[in-house]
Length: 281
Image 1 (cartoon, rainbow, N blue to C red):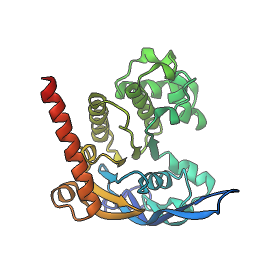
Image 2: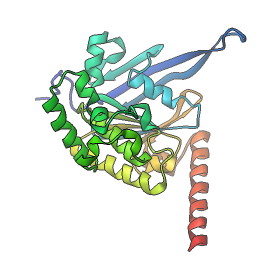
Image 3: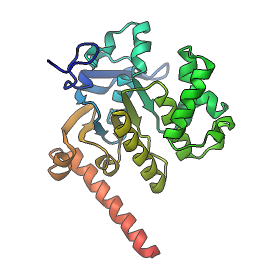
Image 4: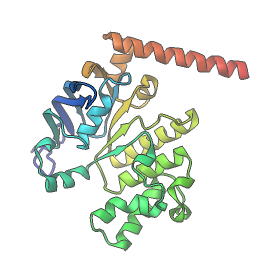
């Protein structure tokens, strides 16, 4: 008998499959001619359960636009986004609200998703309050996810703005976990953190992935960081996927000029850090 999910989709099928995704924006206004800019141009990708796909590229390559479409923060202009066999592009508002519980986003700046004036309890429990969960149920789940991300329950009464960047990212992860998602979209979630904090957050995400069988779409310009976490890598340039394969394959035998350029940038950065370490020693 086939091993199926509740909706009849085989567990061997991709959790997320994006097909021919396109997204355009309009630039210009009263003083300048309005023009259409294509940010995403026919992108295909897929992520399997419990795996991480690294989507890498330079600034302006279109990778964050893909992330916003996958999380349905924006409506794509064309293409399909299949999540557990359902094309979430075609969902009505009520169905979409339910589907969004399974796909959560971690932003570069945690304040984007956390109201800095809220207490930690208010910020982390907000998705549960929107769903109509009781106060006691919210409190119990918040306490559970706070422990999972390594934060003390004594922090619940403090303001979000009182925490460091790394701690705010832990709070953002805790908030995302309250909906028990199956996919986390990490949109430059490590940018702005020092190397030590990056390593701590990366290890936390890997632990959570193992314990919850989470899948990750990891958006980044940092190929070195992605290489340490991703099972597969897709490289974007000018709105298109220019290379896609296993992490080992892409790093060991890059085919596109964009991948080669990103690898050179990574090696230059690693050499610079090694020089600084040797000099300080």
